[in-house]
Image (cartoon, rainbow, N blue to C red; front, side, top):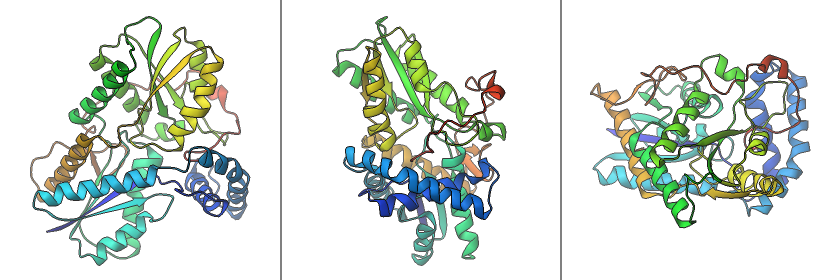
Length: 370
């Protein structure tokens, strides 16, 4: 059987110009239109204006980091995944595709059809299942297949942060960084700090469990590292009158007494603008103003063990199609998809503020990737 694997990521302009950034931003704003329930021509015009207004500032950020490495890192992961699966005797094609930059998800689906793929696997490379990432990416695949009338088996893989090998990889990576920098996570003046990408509360209220995945993943990493204290903050990009996960990084960091912050970008598996610009530049400047020091853990995008994790996920997806035993379970966040987390009950969210209803306000920020 010929298998196709869509390795899906967010996508960012590798060589940014206003001509590439403006439509990139507009696509992001339009995807999130449902947050405000505006889908009319007035909203489309607003999305275009927001994109045009935001584009010059984002261009400066991309230029400051030398362009985003996200797409190139994703392409390399897809290439190595192909090698690993093909080396195991599989007839397989992998396609590195993106939600907001070329090649888009629909283009990957079309290529898979041209290649005679008989089973298609959707693999969003976001460890913790989010609505605008994992769920939206898999919906894009199904929509593309429907629009071209391509009726073959499809298995969507959603969140997989609880995979034991993935957890061990992240733990070892942080431990190595801490040791290399002469730090001690048990030192009262040093704190393990996780920065996770935020998400609108609206998505959580309709069933997405991203916030609880963040809480348990950070807890599990901290316990494995022997850290008796850790903190979790969110990179919230709010530009609408909606609520986001709390706490924001800046007010939380301002309240901390520790001066050495070991910051792990826990929801990312690639370096991109959210890590290279938001953390290394913006957050680092804020932390220095507080008289503290940021030690940012690099994202382990090129750890050889990661390809092993992705390979096993794909193998599990094929087992599902074949009706065999699998470690995956039906996903609660993305109906019709599979993940490592669906069979587990989780406690209520620790990140939805008790006074959230009173906090509804527009804050003039920006959306994911913007």
